[in-house]
Length: 69
Ligand SMILES: [Zn+2]
Image (tube, rainbow, N blue to C red; front, top):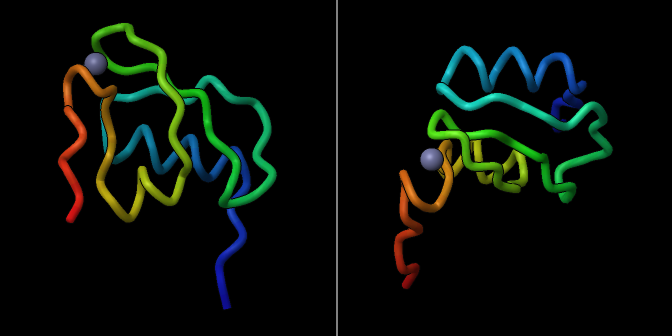
């Protein structure tokens, strides 16, 4: 069973695990991209799954995407 996250739980998780802030006010599921604001001020979009499971917790400038292969 997958846990169902609310936007409040996501905000708590993001703030507890990173310096990133959540700008989104609604959450509709794992495929939705959240609007996030990095510590450096950049806004970026990321699904919560990537944020949580892939540890992509900052913008592409502070944390450049790794080539996946
Ligand atoms: Zn950044």
